[in-house]
Each structure stands twice: as structure tokens, then as C-alpha cells.
Length: 529
Image (cartoon, rainbow, N blue to C red; front, side):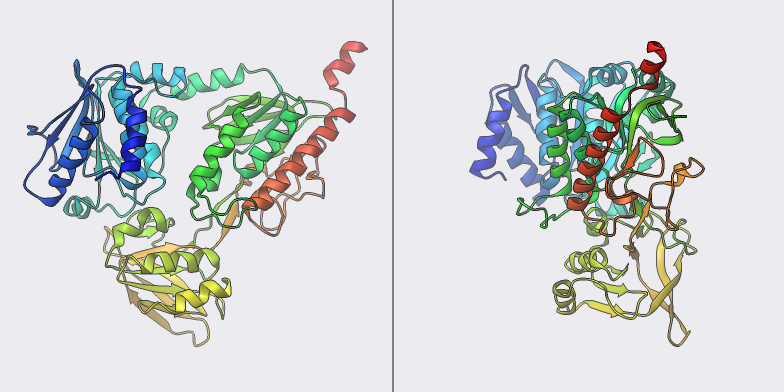
């Protein structure tokens, strides 16, 4: 199962084991079971503290437990092979079970250990899903740190019948005690906020107790991270309040146009940004979703940012880098069938539609790229573009047109997504030239029609927004209010690109620096008087 390079790397990781662990497999005579046996035998051969057993009788087949040899209650179960994006999750599970301390905030670990009640998680992932590892690793940690938590992590491709039976059409898909818990990416803190009553109040109190920042950045994507590096390097106390560090980067694959980097992927670039931010005295506050803003009454005063959990953060200079999100079609059936055939991430959910008929709505680069990726997995792709022609780069269009299981429709308006009450079964398409309606039978719809800025919470603050809701900025990143700057996809910048967001983040950081050195704090002026 593992090549020599992977064995060598895994052997180096396993050198960090501090206590014995057991791998207990439940197998049959099938091919997948044979592969699972081979993988576990290879792992056990790499370290004396690892033992593999094949006498398991519980759980899905094939599956295996990773547990501490002296504490069988602390265990996590993988059903199917955790390879691809999940190989790192497997390595971490081995290390954590073997006593190697996780690189997780100590307060979160204590919160996990303090959970009371019974929490039986089942989580379905695909090997191509780049959002799944965060959920897999969070649940793994919870199961290994608290005997009241069980976690079964299921590779959907191995258990297709169960995926069909549960109507799982998007991953990561997480169930708690037999009921749907959440569809989508979640980190450990997010899971705890849902299962630990009082978690939000505790987090709010902790955040509100922080001293005011000289520069407070709202948003942790490329723009926010770049701004933070610049202001921290200038010596200013900097904080990042981010709903999700990395932002849209976490949903992006195949980045090939970042200068100096031939190829990378969004999650990896996010890790690099987090590591760089970590080199400076920057306070990163995750799960911090902005709710409202009280601008300073005068130059040099404190801007107050209220979060959805009730916390209030303050900063003399504010940089808004809240990014954007996928635009919805806004047609009947879209919300009803989200995660039941309506999807937005082809990389995550594409494998669930193997051999099926699907549609991609949107003829820009993202839509055409999605159609190309999906055409290699699904049975047939119908690409629908509202305009009279595709807007993607010509090289992408040429590739798409070369594929024999793709139909391209232009000048088409999707007016409804239909279903049987449980899942998508088609869509209604209007020919914008003739006005005629057409019904297309299919099993999935991937929507790729652009972005909406995350700025609704800024209305009525005095910050000027464009008719599209984008923050209006000048060449220095300044907004219409003194001491408040903005950067990235939430602003009026024309090109919503990673490298552009980084550049505008740097510009906003330098703008905030200039503001701070030219305007003394109001409090200091008052004290001097």
C-alpha cells in the first residue's frame, strides 16, 4: 500500500510515539479488506509500539480501530482506507493515540475533556475532499481525549450503499447520535461550540477581556494575513478576527498563477500564511464572526467591533478584509436541495456523483474548470451560461469542448431546480432568445456564478458601499471613515484574485501605519490635558 518514500516518512513520524497502540481490524475476504490488512501490517512493522490485530468483530467491513493499548475507551475507527487527503489524518491519529501531544490550543483540549454526556459521531468523507480532513482530525482528537466521545470516520467510496441510503450528496457529512449534525467543513472549536452549552459565552468573555489593538483586522484570508504581517512588522499590536482563517483559500485547489509559486493548493497556502503570521506577535482569533461596527467618534479614537457571540473587540485602526462567498442562484429549489444534489464545491462533492448526469451553472473560469474536473468523474455534464457566450479563458474553453460527455448551453437561464422531496432530479431552463422552457433530467447541480461580498453587517455604519455591496476604497485602501481601511474581495477592486488580495492587504496595512503615526490616541491627548 505504501511506497518506500511514504514508509520512510511515516517511520520518522512514528518515532514520536510515547506509549503502545493497537490497530484492531474488522475484515472479510474482499479486496478492500486485503488492502486494509496490508496497510496495517506495514504500519505495525515500522515501530515496536504498534501492534496490528485482525480479530475485530464490530463495525463496518472493512474498518479498523486505533486505540491506546492500556485504555481501550480512547479510540477512533476508520471505515475504508484513509488515503489521499486523509493520509495525514491517519498519521495524526496514530501519533495522538500514542501520546504525542497535538498542536491544539490547550483551552480547547480541556474543553474536549470536560464534555459530559454521550457523543457518537459518524462522519463521511471522500478521498478527494480537501475540506474533510479538518473534520476528521477534530473528531479523532475528541474521541481520543474523551471516553464519552466515539468517532467513526467513513470513506464514502467504500460504502456507496450506505451513502445512497442516507442521501449523502455532499461531504463532509457528519452525524451525531444517528441524526444529521452538520454538512460542511468544521474545525474543532466550531464542533465544540455546537455540543458544549455555554461555549459561546465563555469565548465571548475571553475575547472581550483582550486589551484594545492598535490594528484590528477583520478577516483571515490572503488580504487579512498580508495586512497583519505588514502592521506587525511596523511594531503595532495587531489582531486578526476571522470567522475562518484562510477564507476562500480553504475551498480553492490548483493555484498556478501566484508569482514565485509554480503550483500550490489553497489549504497548503493557508497553512503557509498561518505559519508566517505565527512568526510575529499577531493575535489570531478564530470563529470570530463580525456582527456590527461602532466607528470611533473622532480621529485617534477606538473602533468597536461586536461579534455574533456577543464579544466586543476594539482597535485604533481597523482593516476590513471579510472576503466574499459563493453567489446563490436564488431560484426555487436551490435552498431546499442544498447538499441534496445542489453543490458548490466540485472537488469535495464530485466523487459522490460518479457516473451520474449533472449540470454546472456558470461559464466563467470557475464554472468551466468545474465542468472539466467533473467530466472526468460523472457520466455527463451540461454547462449552462446565462450570457450569449462563455466567459472563461480560451484555453479552458478549448479543453472543455474536446470532452465528449459535455453539452454547452449559452443564453440559458435556470429558473428552477426540481426534486422528488429528497434529492435533485432536474432543472428548468429558459432559452433567453426564444423564451421557451426546457426541463433537463439530472442528479446534481453545481453552481459557479461568482461571488457576493461579506459586507451586509456594514450597512448603516457610514462606510460607503458600492451598489454591489463592495467597500469603496481609494488607492491607499482608505474607506470613507478615518482610521478604517479595507482590502481584498470585499472591496471594489476589479480582479478577485489571490495575488491582488495580498497586494491590497499590504496597501491597507501601510495605510493603517500612516494613519497611526499621524494621529495620536484620543485617550493620550485627554490624559495630557
